[in-house]
Image 1 (cartoon, rainbow, N blue to C red):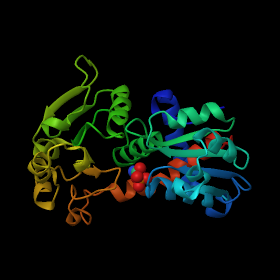
Image 2 (image 1 turned 120 degrees about the horizontal axis):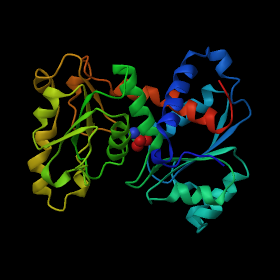
Image 3 (image 1 turned 180 degrees about the horizontal axis):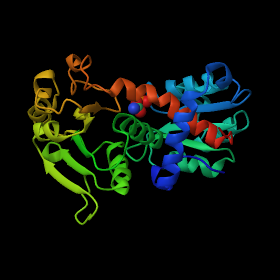
Image 4 (image 1 turned 120 degrees about the vertical axis):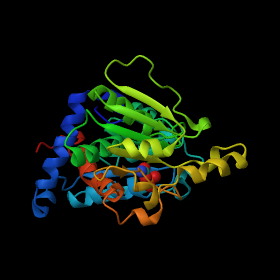
Length: 302
Ligand code: CP
């Protein structure tokens, strides 16, 4: 049974297929859209908090005429009585046509996919993967620039613990001829920076401004306060990774800012009203991309 567990399971052709399908879904009139997944049920099991992923899957399903069952946190399920993860997913398999799972443990969605015979979508497993978010990020970049290659993309903030940054970089590397400016505090560098990549250019810096000045797309990642053993170290870096309108005066007029969200203080609210802010569009695209994923995995052709 096909599912969506890791972006690395997809070829570039598969990725383009999902992005093109999302474009086609957007073009379907609302009354016709409501018939596409009529009578289908999504089981949504969220073992970790979520706003965008859970609600956009719910919105995607509702607008396609389907229904959602599940839980937003496991304490309301029989897990609180000691039921195992395996029995929980086996149970929901009896009631649903497809599952989406967010879990703090790496590999949880893959484990679920081995237990059930319906498609499983990984909605984030620990610091590992969040493949529907990666597709949203790619879809948003393509909507803005019309391409996924020959771009300068700045990644700023916490690049070490982000589960969205490394998979996105890997896909953009495969499209090729991209320049990556990685701007992070020294302790939060991307853990693996490709040394011998003939198709792309990598630059590392601790200077946020360098990424702001040169980028076509600026992908911002929250500095994760909870990861710092020494809070003084956090205090030192947090102010240097805040994007505000003054800093954006040095950006290209066409530069657009993405952020998977939630944000804390890394993008000042004053940026929201500028033409640089693309993160609200990005979250809106979550519905189209997740509709494409649901339709594809449930075998509906458009
Ligand atoms: N981007 C994202 O996964 O947001 P949530 O944690 O709110 O789902």
